[in-house]
Amino acid sequence: MLVLKTRKGQKEVAVDTGLTLLDHALKENVEWGFSCTRGTCARCRCYVAEGRELLALPTEAEEDRLEPEELEQGFRLACQCVVRQEGNISVTHKPYF
Ligand code: FES
Image (tube, rainbow, N blue to C red):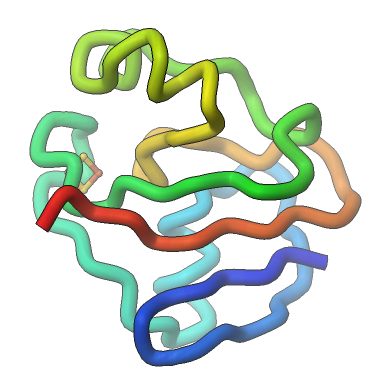
């Protein structure tokens, strides 16, 4: 189960491994701000509260765009972050502005 939280509320959706967090949001009609889908704008930035170990490691784009401390704290770019394994994941949309 993947819980996608935004300022407008939250939705529980089924995990589809191989898809990014943003793919899940778009597929399930969750209003998730994004722009570039290439890991540069950070509009899709999010905080992973649960299930970090079920996600693929940060991409090069995430390493470039996010500070090491942000990655360590659990911030990711939803357009880059692929779900690798089924399980409980909870993600909150946290753009900078
Ligand atoms: S949509 Fe631009 S970084 Fe994800």
